[in-house]
Image (tube, rainbow, N blue to C red; front, side):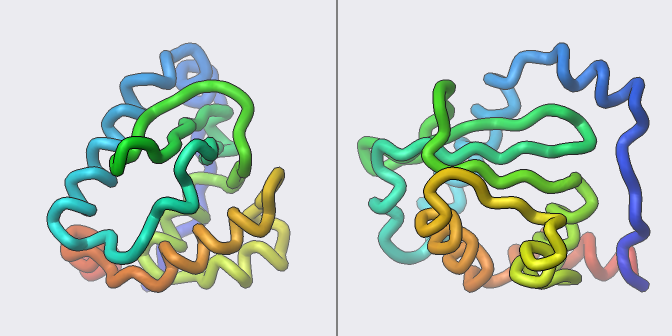
Length: 143
């Protein structure tokens, strides 16, 4: 059973836009750093050094930005080098491998703005990673 289509309600989006970005961004980069230390993020991620990546969740009107520096991922603010935009449901479909990011890109449901070469490289690298156990369990519960 595929993930049902959903959009966050406007009141929740209004609340999300008022919350500070930093705590969520910090949790995100902490998860990336832990995954890398555990050997789950393999390969060379130095192409992100000094380049800001922004992930925006359109239906929440919120997002987070990060970069890589000093051999670790770091939450940052400022002008992004590349920005990904999609609804939360589409990000979750990508994470659960229910949808191919390329399909969503060509359907204009996943947008890549700024340095698209870096964006496509990052998208391809993330898509090639094995699905983490917690996402396998989530996908199995939904199915």
